Image (cartoon, each protein chain N blue to C red):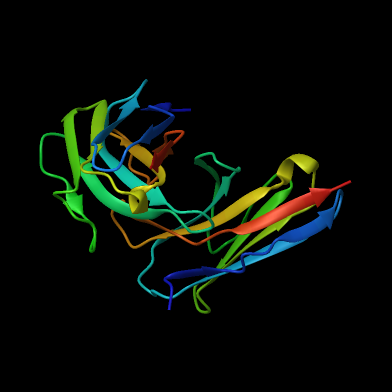
Length: 109
Length: 117
């Protein structure tokens, strides 16, 4: 079983739609959680950290459920520029990031 | 934000040659740099952790004699793919963690696309 699992998609949504991605992680000792965004043939860029209390950054809301080992990302009012692959990332302490394979989002007119 | 550069952006080489990739933190000091590899439609996989002035720590299954890492200064780490073969063709990405921060954010370089013929 992969340490971080994501539905690869692609998710094709119309502009303005609300879309949610989920991610599960297998190691209960995981300590920090992030969503990264990766555009085609580019490096990943940090989108936001994820906390148990939930956190929001503009149109983006992230949530962590430690009991279920589940992380979510909600994007409201999606824009064409949101088209990318969204990577769920966890750490077990220290500096090592473990990446999911990513969920591809395509926002269409 | 912090900037990390990689050079070259892409390289095409013949099988059996060695390729060196540089990773630099441009506006901060990085005590730790990380090297990742990403095959098409797969996740980034950590290859090794590079600490300034000490030997790199390799992940299980990564050959240290094939992927030579040198972290000679607080702003530069190099990855040399020795005797490259077509199966080494991949997207190699480095990241750097700043020296004086307590959180886990890593700043990624733009990546190097290696194609071995």
